[in-house]
Length: 376
Image 1: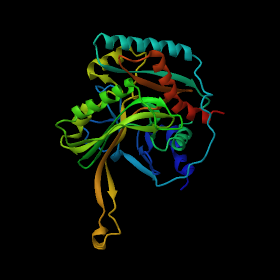
Image 2: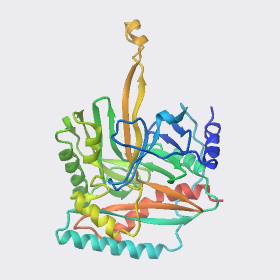
Image 3: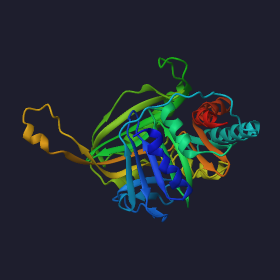
Image 4: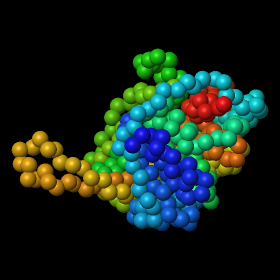
């Protein structure tokens, strides 16, 4: 089936206000979808549920679930990506200077709070509104697929919540049976034709904060911990520092997520103090930006190797339980005739407010590139 034909029914699901999620995992060609049979709101209670979870930044708020048992399953095994033109810098918000003044002042407040000992690090963000001509979420999803093959790309809709799209580079955690992996991702600079770059002290320190927090948080609920050396990874037009962490899941999934979310990569350190600062000082409500989303306890068949000599044993597929969650970064919300873009960055005692503003501008290009491609 062609990609266009596969996506066409989702235009109707959107118009008829049926909850759904479309998604493609990093470096994969399969597009999966759950379409809820009614418009009821379902919530995660203890992470024993099966389906697709959409969780907000504030971990005291409810997490929305599109339940497997109340949904139709759609899947496209592979697809061809169409080329298209997309200018980098033609979409600008009309009040960018006001956004800049507001964000620079916010960063200054954050740096002052760190210097006064309130916390070690805080992640501060902003929302930017861009007016669009009749935005089409399914078309935007298709463009995201084409531009960001290494990201988790999604289009999530519930008539009682709203519509979100994104292409996030960051895994919160992945669990296959009792094997678990996660990552520490922090530090940002623009990609300029090479991944062989030098990182400043501020970026290295920011990334180490995240790594240390995750490793310490997983003590007691994860065994056989393995931590890689930091490496530079590319996410679209940006570079980040990444450390991979893996091991065996000893505790229950609910406890692990409670310990991890929100991580210092989207909140700060210590968690409670930085989160309180964010909720009080940021000029908007993040809702699902810097929350997490993804598959929860879905069954996945894993075919045995057909090249093995004992063909009889290969008649049986193994089935594993998979939870695959991603941090909701590089995302936007479609609301009426506008796209709301969300961008932020980690603030430490060495942060320069002007440079932090520029980092958010670079990050906003991920979504602006896609929005520009569908403007008439």
